[in-house]
Amino acid sequence: MRCRPLPLIITLSLFAFFIAGASMSASDNFDEAKVPPYTVPDPLVCADGSRVDTVAEWRERRRPELLNLFSELVYGRTPAGAPADMHWAVTSVDRQALNGAAVRKEVTIWFTAGHDGPALHLLVYQPAQPPPPGGWPVFLGLNFFGNHSVHPDPGITLSSAWMRESEAHHIVDHRATEASRGTHADRWQIETVLARGFATATAYYGDLCPDRPDGLTEAVGALFGTPSAEQRRDNEWGAIGIWAWGLSRAMDYLVSDAELDPRRVAVHGHSRLGKTALWAGAQDERFALVISNNSGSAGAKLMRRRYGSSIGYATSAFPFWWCRNYATFAEREDELPIDQHELIALIAPRAVHVGSASEDLRADPRGEFLSVLHAVPVYRLHGRTGLGVETMPEIGDATLGDGLAYHVRGGAHNITAEDWRHYLAFAEKELAHRPSTDR
Image (tube, rainbow, N blue to C red; front, side, top):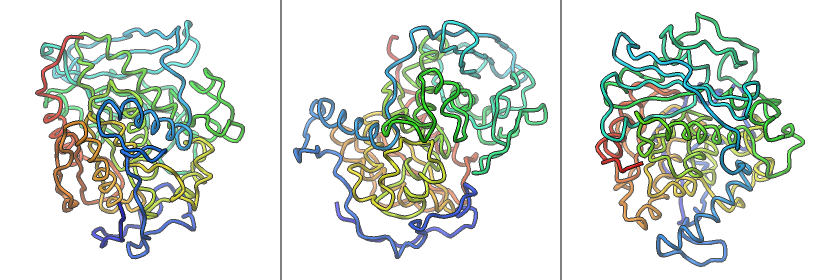
């Protein structure tokens, strides 16, 4: 499909220019008039030029081909499955949490036979009343600042892990304190989620891989012998691959919890964790809904549009997030044989909701919408209509289609109550009222 520059519908924001705190790449573009003509790869056409026309052909030929390309060229290779010695234990339960409104569980997932190796600390809240048949549907996502940051509940174990002081590009050594409880509760809207009949589960992403250049050799990276960012093989995974792998390990636990419904799990993430959610959802077909909030470059946005953060910016500012091969396509976006609409297409026929913010120009809201739109042919192949529209919604509006959804709110790079309102509406449409089958 041939595309031409589209009119600018969003306002420029200094916050968007400096969201990561790093300088712009020379190839970064924030002028809609400078978007070049570009060709979007057809997600249904294989590398040999043949076209897949059935779901069986998609699953046998094209889907494995696309997964291989994203693994080889963008995120790196993911080890298969869970470690043989992985095990978990529910370490605490409070059935009168949040003044009786919730059940709070804390679960430790160890990746080795002993308890001295890397582990993921999972926090689960579910409604206090008895679960429905099949269990509660679940929102699962990683957090940036420890489980204690998602709610001021004093019963949440305070993280002892290293973490960034902020999401900015600069790194400041920081440890959690009592004062940091609930500092990002507005991003999680836990009471609202519970009131709508969903459980929510979260874990600190730094348990899996510390978000700094030398973090690849620690935690899960150490478990698999991952070298430093510079010494990795060209197709070896980076932090996003490790974080996505961790979401699947959290899913392994959810499958075992009889009070939760593993067939109705929405995996979600904001910013770099939105990229992570998409990659997790593309690889692990147990996730029924994938939510990407402001994920931008190597997340939801089309890279060929050359608007917002470029591959050059992404791989120079955060070289350890991706595999080394990705950096070779800086200034060569058109030569990359895939684009991000095909990452969304890999999730079909399961549901995807992409959310943008009008001032988050690095993430390219229009490019995120177009990425969803260009995934529609794969959803139609699977018997779903997809978005149902071809026009980007106005700021503040949402398009909740059949299998695909998109919204753009006013404001900057963040996840807000307004975003959650749209995500919950789509989740209710796709998950909450869908009959659960036997486990």
